[in-house]
Length: 412
Image (cartoon, rainbow, N blue to C red; front, side, top):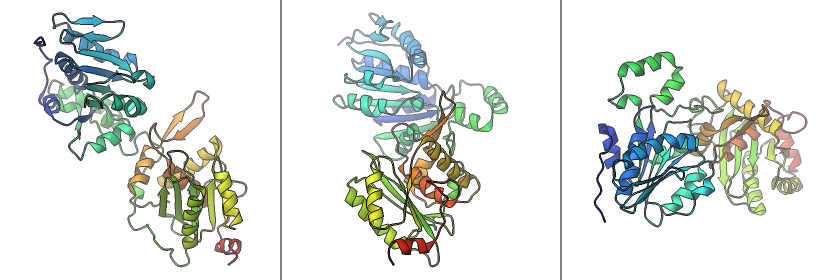
């Protein structure tokens, strides 16, 4: 193999630390102008110089052009390098190559084995680009990956960052703009003075803002380690919210202590057999004797609700439409803002609440849901249950909480 050398771009100490770290998967949450693109481009070309195949992947070709310009600038130093502008490919005499791709169509990322991939601004791309296309492409060559992005709330990039905080295969860094010694400190202070605090913290301090960009504000303020109950409290009233699992989703049963406004018990499982789900629900209902079991009716919920009615459980169907989901989610959001709710220190529930997001559609309507590749089962179970607290009407008339209702329907 022919020996190739290039003059790499000037890197500051933290860029060198990241470049020399042995972790197979590196996650960089960076402030603006920290130098993530320069570092990623240098590593892509370095892999190709050694005969490997590397990809630069961005949310769109417009975003990818920034990396492409740096990659071609480095390639021009190498005698015999072939720059195919139409295909955005650099082929080197070593047999290595660098390709620049867009993640807007994740299926187009399938097919080739890779030695290295950079996911640029990956917080702004769909997670399936990584999980379904790029991660499998690294398997046969034991390839490596680097994820570089400014934060965007608590989406899948945040989960990768959390994964990199513990372990050796994954490693993550929080890298504010000020860590780049080539950036004038006065420029950063000018940005601090001219930007809203939340934007500055995210874009320059590289912080994953708590509840940033999400629907539910004050989630961590509502966490109370003492609100979990394994047994019902005397004279307390309860409601249960049920979100049925579909395909790879989870079924979640959430019990709310109406007397205290506490989420006091959660049962989460991903077995979709009807009889199994009914048994789990009946065990929890027998224990807490909820005045109402508010259960999603859509899809597979319909036959299960019919079975619950035959068992004379106090079930009320929740028909999920854009309107009813919006009402339930906004009622729950308001409960967090007004400090009317307490939740247990449950990592899944907290993570899903913080990641849950809204999107304004071209029609002007708002769509609520989890970011691509994540779940919202605990959120929906809680929202469906909370709708019975008076903030939203799940189906028909407003629910009246009464323990006698449960005992009468159960024939007790």
